[in-house]
Image 1 (tube, rainbow, N blue to C red):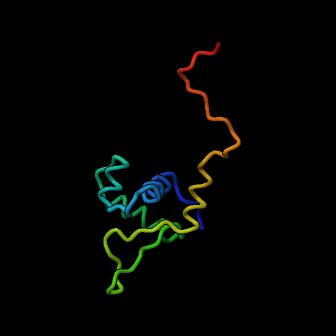
Image 2: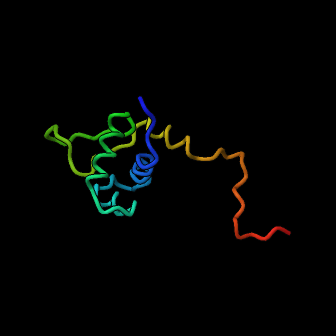
Length: 97
C-alpha cells in the first residue's frame, strides 16, 4: 500500500489534533481550501490506506463527526515529527554572534 501524500498527511494531522472529530468543512477551513470534495477524496484515500476509520452510529451507518485516526495513521504522523534528541532548528531571523 502506498504511503499517504503530503496533503493526506495534512488532513490526517487536522483530524488527529481536533478535540472532537472534525467535519469536512472544518478540515477544509483549517487547510485553507474551499472544496469539501477534495477533503472527502483525501479521507477516502486515507481509509483505503488504513490511516483513518469511521465509527458507526447506533443504526450501524456512519455518522457525522465519526472519523478516527488509526494506529497506522498515528505511525505515519510520527514519521513527520523530528526525533526529540535533535535540537530545534534555529530561526532564520536570528543573527549569529
